[in-house]
Image (cartoon, rainbow, N blue to C red; front, side, top):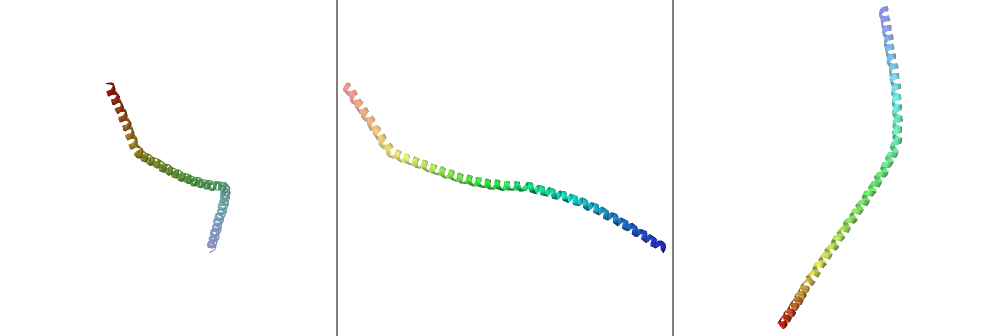
Length: 131
């Protein structure tokens, strides 16, 4: 029985030594994990400090781009309105030209024909008087 007790004691000592080795290993792993997490924390703080100005600039740029696009939209609308006004003025000028041509063209052509006939008559008269 004493041999069994000795064997159990040796097994207990071995189990405790293994458990101690695992605990020491876990302590080493936890220390390394702490170092890795500390490095990550420093990196995150550095990234955060560098990202904030960039985000502020992005916000300013976004606001500026929005303002510019709104201004461009306003300018495009003004150009469209101006083109519409010019088109309307051109249509009015063409309409006035047509009206004037309709009113004046007939009497002018009649007057030209009358003057041509008058000259032709005068020429014929002088040709007959000379002959």
